[in-house]
Amino acid sequence: MKRILLPAGGAVLATGLLAAGLAGTAQAAPDWATDPLANNNAAAASVAQYWTASNNAALKSATAYYHDAAPTSWKSGGGYSPDGKPGAVLPTGEEKVVATKVKNINLPKNIGKVFWTDKQGKNRWASGASIQSKYRNLVVTAAHNVYDTAGVGDADVLKNWVFVPGYYQGKTPYGIYVGKTAWTHYDFDVYEDYDRDYAFVTVYNGVFYGGEKQVTAADYEKFVGPKYVKDAWITEAEYKALLDKYGPNGPQFTVPESNGSEKVGHDYAGPKYLSYVEVTEAGYKDALKNTKFDNVYKNGEAAAPPNGVIVKKLTESEYKELLAKKAAGGFLGKLEEVKQNNIVVSWKSTQYYVNQWYQKNAVKFGVHSYFIEISKDAGRLGDNVGGQGFAWNQKTGQAVFVFGYPEGPHPDGDKPYTGITPKWVYGKTSGKVYVSAAQKIEEHIGVKGALTPGADGGPWVLKYNNNKRLGYVNGVTSQFGDQDGNGRYDLITSAYFDGETADIYKKAANVWSGRIVGPNGELYK
Image (tube, rainbow, N blue to C red; front, side, top):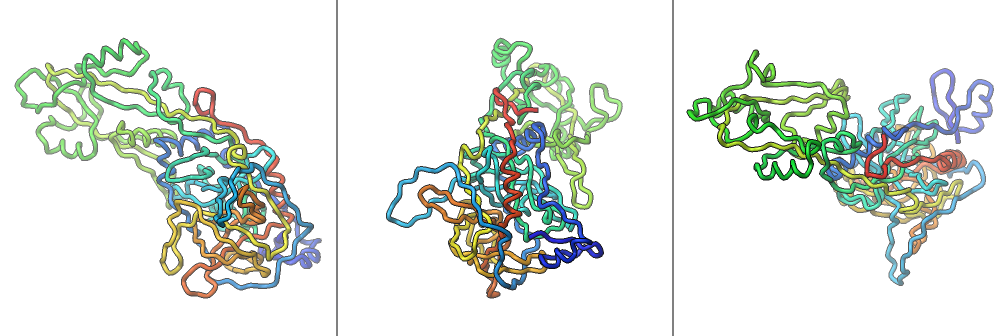
């Protein structure tokens, strides 16, 4: 049921009779809102690169998202009234599972984790699921897993949003799916109305991490996607072998006389030459007091930077590239995010250099080897993991399975779940609605269960077929409640899926996304 915005204080109401009475003074808003997550191939490629770089390092660093404003108290009221006839869309992707007499729950492979980067630059995750759509490219989750709701009217879409079905400890068995467009209810987008805490997100074809490949310098420059340089000292024989193999377009060799050999102090009596080298911050500080270094750089020295510490302002893409290079040991300096009011506004690097004496008669050869990380097109989400059906205006009191990845603690601090593997609860949806004034919740439905944060966004599946692992999504976990006040979550709630929910779903389910991986493993620009 749509909320009505009163002209004078912005109060939000949920009464159909009042809406009719104010028809002449209130202007109806559309049911739906759309916002781009990665609205073109270049943006999507950047998101894929962010998560797949260094063998999915960012995915492994993500932590579960705990909702900032969980309700402290719940009230229950009368039952929810559907706003039209019940309806359903059939699921796709039947799995072949051998039926057994033992009652075990076969978890659907189309549930997974949604990942994003929050305003503080931290990588977060929650739960979601693949749902049936025309182009098999749709994810359902909670709207608060798509928007950063800092305040009413101040909702921003979350950065680097992806869905990973079947995610397990850094592994992406079916690929990473970059979000393209978020479809939500207008009332959540504008007013943070948690009675509309659901979102449908179209995603691009999936991306697989396909390992690293050494390439020439020319191919490295042309490649779009995760890439990095490895620096190493090699022998003269190795140098000649690489030169024969790659020619002038191969690895970039350093000049032997400038970078070679054994380090000596400034008082070394034999043949020596002075060069400059990059060191870590600790090495730089050591150079100020250690006699094996001649000195840190001074102004006016030939063939040397103007001073020993060089600070550069970076773009976000340069920052991410250097971050991957640093993880591979190819960058010795510091990388920092510059923040204002806890928001990242720019990036910078700090590098340290010292003068260094070398023996002239102990030449080594330095080489930069170029590596790219190959991506593979994983295909459409629904083709790989299937999609749950969708149902709306269903009567309450029906049994559902609630799936998700719980990880957070109970209010009393007990932490029974790890978030590593999905869990489920089974129960009947309540005949009453649940109310929480703090989040404008007036008509949530509930299921008794002890899941904890991390599971929010997970699907409520009606008429679940344990052999096919399919059913009909009829809700997504929004909130967790402690009804008896004993410090343990015992209630899970969801927005009621009504005709307005169905309208938003149908719009999202008919939009095509596309692919972002080229034929040679490159990410499209």
